[in-house]
Image 1 (cartoon, rainbow, N blue to C red):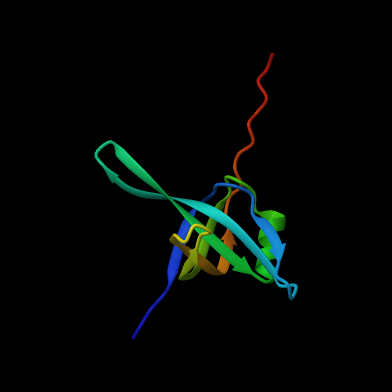
Image 2 (image 1 turned 135 degrees about the vertical axis):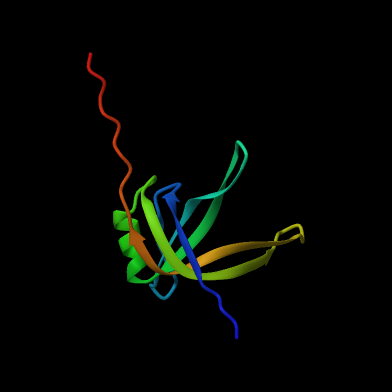
Length: 113
């Protein structure tokens, strides 16, 4: 039995970009920064690309902002392509089934003069 389920919790590194496929399906892409392991004083953050389709893509583009917490449930997908110079490339990304919005980033308070 195979299982391809991913659950990520982190913060958006940029505002989502919404675009539309040739048949009009909304697609949104964004990157989630997820705290990784800590080894001594060294901490590592992973940056995971996420793609979402349909109504959730439009909602993400409308309401999500850089720095906002997000919980993503989805599946891994390997994308492969060949560059113009013939090099083969690949990228692992998450195709989201569900996105839950978390707290928005705090706005900086103006300093009193």
